[in-house]
Image 1 (tube, helix red, strand yellow):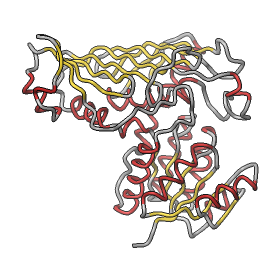
Image 2 (cartoon, rainbow, N blue to C red):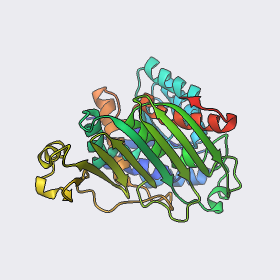
Image 3 (cartoon, rainbow, N blue to C red):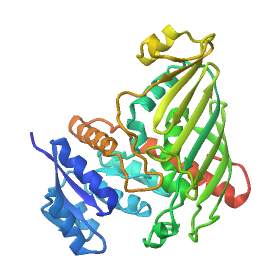
Image 4 (cartoon, rainbow, N blue to C red):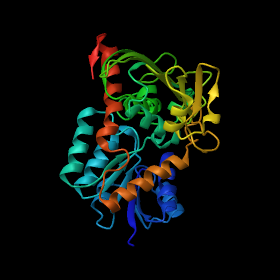
Length: 370
């Protein structure tokens, strides 16, 4: 079988995880790499992963007829520019999070993919975790009844040098935002994926301690389309970061139970008077004797055997390679099978639109429809 030939745009930290995932799959190869500042670093990256071609202009990589698909790993504010050019040249595109930092650009990306009959996917590792996938299944089946309250938080730490060591981090033009748009976008995407659409927001966002153009702290009150209400909080100045893969925590309350994602694990809490142990075992795949709790409140772990939790809340380079491999392998399958990728562009757009609404609310002091 002919291998899918990938290109990678930008050779920063996250690009290494894309390259490793491409090579590990076995059905693809890294054919070309495009850098933007240092030809020496770009050549070094290409040599490490066996790419034969090196570019310093993304338009040249996009025009390369030997490339089938491209991983866009550039700064967030360049995602749309790079992806659209590649898709117009017939390349499938897997884009790092966020999809872009502007709603109209994301809409153009989605339209360009459709018009050119190519795939557009995005990377949100939380969606690959077995416990959260099981939670999604339970929620979508309506087993827990009416959704009532949602709490979503990102709690991480980024020192001042994290921003001063980069020309684009903490800038409006290329980062697009701070603790919500960059770090907290994982938690927000997970929330949107599980809960459904947010109807309106009222929020504030500020740089409280860091000398940056974007926020290091933000909070918002959310109203969901399904009638639930929620609270969103994000910060990169916490002295006690959340011990989770993306520094996030999520609690979703329902009429008959609660979904809690904390410290990288997903739990289902139910009341025995509403849902029996036998019913829980049936919907979770767990044995009745594995369900913990007192006579009334039951606690069930939804995750499979996933090993140690990898947390990037304090160290952004501490990335879960298994999740990236899942998404890259699925994207390769989507290309080969001519189907939608696991996280398509229109789904990835929703969390960014919510963040933009929080920013607009903070600027205007008004409630904003999403």
